[in-house]
Length: 127
Image (cartoon, rainbow, N blue to C red):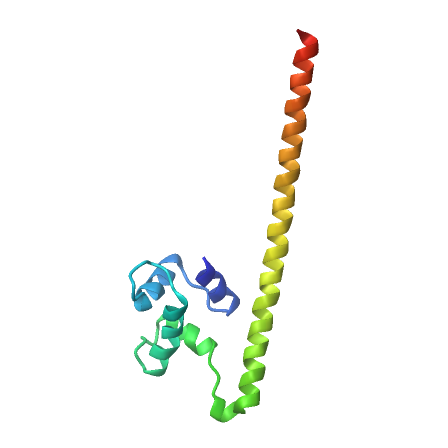
């Protein structure tokens, strides 16, 4: 799911099968997930020309690369800082959304408990 969201945010959305294919291409431990090491392997394989041109991983590598010789170290620094800022603001939004959902669940649970307590009290007086 994280890979799907990342690809969408980078402007290169993938199908479910495309994502599975991407993971399979670098999944060294065959767990069906991307570890950080396997994620970094994407860029190593792209630089070594070991990825297919039409691969989703190649698209990911191209969307996330910068030519330091052309841009200079300061340009690369600015590029990665901008990427990190964009990711952190997206993470902040997701955290706020999760907190809001947790608050709604808490309120619903309180409502259920109040109803149960009322029914119990009502049963006491009805008997």
